[in-house]
Amino acid sequence: MTAIAILSNPQHGIWVATDGAAYTRDDGIMRSIVTKVVLCPEWDCLITGRGRGGAAEDFRYRAQAADVSSFDQLIGEASDYAEDVEEAYAKICPDEAYEAGAGHFSIVICGFSRRREAFEIHTVSTRAGSIWNPLPPGVDPLPPFAVDHIQGTALFLPSPLSAAADRVGLTLYCGQPDFTFGDPALYVQRVVAACRFSADAGAGSLDQPSPYIGGFVQLSRIYRQPEQETVEGEPAIILDSRITHRWPDEVGEPLDPERGALPSWAGPSQHSPADPTGR
View 1 (cartoon, rainbow, N blue to C red):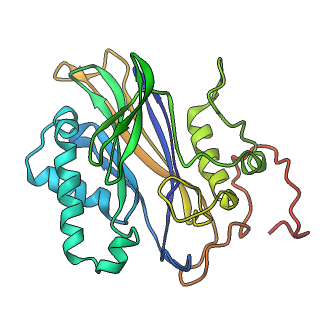
View 2 (cartoon, rainbow, N blue to C red):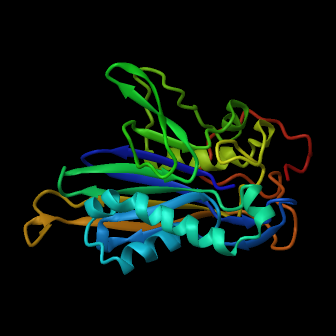
């Protein structure tokens, strides 16, 4: 499972934190430590996702092969590329593994729309979901491969347990009015760290936390330069990414949430570990 935490400001930028653990579904054995973020400066966006490994990279490849030239075009055609990725994998994936969910994925696209002059988050998934419709108020079904424009400020996939949030000094956002995130870069990193300790909520679903969060925490940003700095009259959009914490997870061993110290940027913990060494 992948942990993705996103905060967005339509006029200033988007902050994204992800983990770096790739593992086998059945036993939780670490198989590799990988980035889960694809930076796409050619489209003023970054792509990440959950579920089947490599789906985000394959999605980008298919968009490049189709000569996509902008973020807005990418969003308009995202359903087609996601279907192409799923169809290609279905042809090579063993039937039993595919039926068990090995082919499922969700793509998250964060970028700057030059048409709407705003930073936006869009998702597309192989599974059906739901979408909030403000007029009239209610929840509507979202078919597989339909693109969903996320309207809120925050997107946490998954949202960590409150007890896990306490361990990393995180005040968890649950829709409270007048909630203050503070430093958005720090906040999204703490969400991913909290997801590592959220195994009690269950595993094996795209929508549930799992104990298989690890490897590292990667912080990525997409933001605009000051208004006076442009490229041929267009806003100058900057993308960057870095590793901010590494856990001592070993390839070939089960992922253990209790292995390693808390990140240096974690806040005061309210948790007392059973292990006196604080492992």
